Image (cartoon, rainbow, N blue to C red):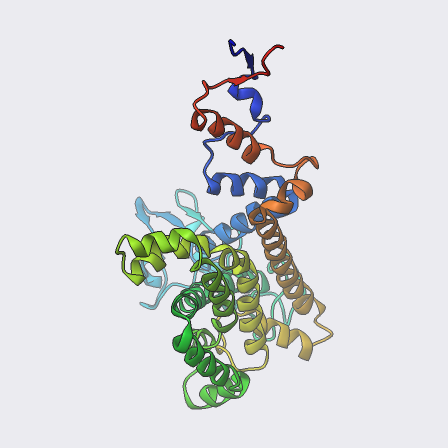
Length: 398
């Protein structure tokens, strides 16, 4: 009896618009992330703001970016020049906020390009029209000054850069330690896992704040000291999640196959198990950054962090608390902190949903499930059964 065939739709019709069987997992995650509007725009805004802060010297600085004086070009942002070079009387470093120097640089035939905000984070303007500090917002200082006369806008710009860079470094260090320790625990298990768990419990029970107070009283305050101390405790919770993932994945068939092929334990860990255990690690990155920013601000607020005139959001919050009549200090600093944490929170939520394929399309898309896995299964099943692609045997006619 001859077997007839019913023609299936073409391969392209098995995949909804925007879906492709050749898309990598990373590309699928990125597309799900982009569909989360709040998280995607938060990422763009955060990247833009951090990029501006990295170019802080071009936006807020007490030196001109470029000077053309008496037929010669000068670059004060890169080199120090004496006051006498620009017509001053003393061979000391030029103060470009001095009205005399500014008049000389802006005289006919000369040219000076100043940043939009002519203040560095530690600039003291001795020629300011303000008679007391902290001074309210004005044309000279857009967001006012703090109790020492430093420009608030400049300190917020550089403080934001320092906070984000510190949080990035702290997150990277904690992630590396957490992944390494959690991977060893989860993969080897047994006595190795038991011993590591007991050591982690002892280490995690140590009073972190008291240790910070002790070390801050013994050593000079610096970002390096804070980074080392916070990194020693920032990996514990992440290691637990990585450990659980490794305990689950080490029992799967692909790990057993890798062992049968003679691969070493470290090759299996780094090449096979780790890439399939990174979901909790990636999900926690934005939240770890938020914790790092808040940790630095809190320690500076308590006086355990870096000392002035280093730019710090925590120092500004402490000044705002001590000077409630200077409302601009606390208001603008609080706004920067809240905006930063909100952006990171939205990014973290979007990343969490994008990595969870079970809810990604229901919560982020149009409410339709992702038909791509089913379509791929149908496309792959036909050749495996010896059937020509695009055709499936129909029932025989009686």
